[in-house]
Image (cartoon, rainbow, N blue to C red; front, side, top):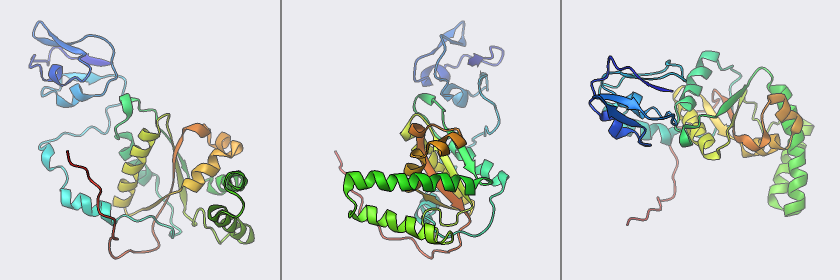
Length: 266
């Protein structure tokens, strides 16, 4: 709930002009709330007197900006983006809880549609071997599903059958989890919200020296494992991303070529 601390409000009207749903007004030279709203926080962030509070949310993680235009150097940020790679070779090193909390903070402060903030995260590290078994069961079901829709001789089906055969022959030949020490499952009613959070989490993980692999195969396999979803207490229809995380066991020396950007200027 948005609350105006009248003793601090100077009636400057900045929050009234900024509110995207026109939910604020000036009454007796003080800001006033008309009704309940989506609590996007724009008024909280822009008030020069700190006269606005949003009571429904914890206040931890709030930072003050002295000069917002120079928070991050653009060239360095682009360098970070260009330097990330999908990692398929991990060290046998556990990710500390404090590091996880910092990484997931990037997801917490990612924009969500209508300020829904309904994202949930399942960090699988202690019980990874148990979850792997559920995912491999779902992976077998995925192969059968694709055989019916694409045919048993399709390149994709042959690839997945090869991965499954390697797994059955040797637990060390792991072409699905790549021996990563942890798995992050992101769920939300909005695939866009989940994808945006996952992207920010990946960049934060990369900045912390971690490697990430987005796995569509794990995501689809987990969604086909009812026992796996029940074990993680998630709904299969809400899975937005499955991300393997760990410390890379490989060091890349340069960024890679990309196709030219397709832009339409009008």
